[in-house]
Image: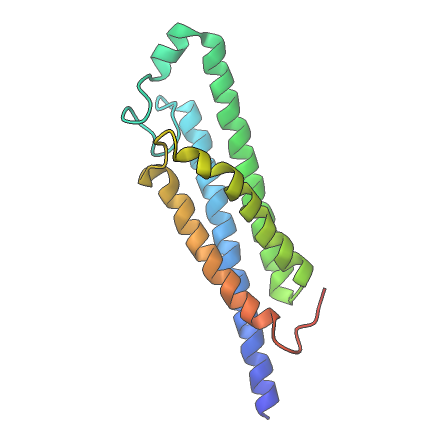
Length: 164
């Protein structure tokens, strides 16, 4: 019966990895929610960004240009929507596809955040916006996600997991 045990171990790794990937996706949704709430608070600036990174607050921006303030607010709203949508896509693909051994779901669940992060994260560094308070939650979610990817992949690459 060793083959059954091995297959059960592979299924367990796949389920565990998919669960971690799902948790990370939901963490992105939580980050997006915080991002959205801060837009409507007096903070105005993003999570983890303060006067050390940006020398003008909401009042100064509104006094300078109400239209610019509205534009910045609209970017925060739109970006929070895209971050939440990405998180939901990761969670859904992971829970309903990766967990079942669907390779297409795994490939898509990995590709979606990789593209988003490769585009968005590097721009934080030249302007000193890569604070721990700002990117730390993202990096924590990414670490959980990568652990899940590694565990799920070990179950996917095994014989007997030939879906999708």
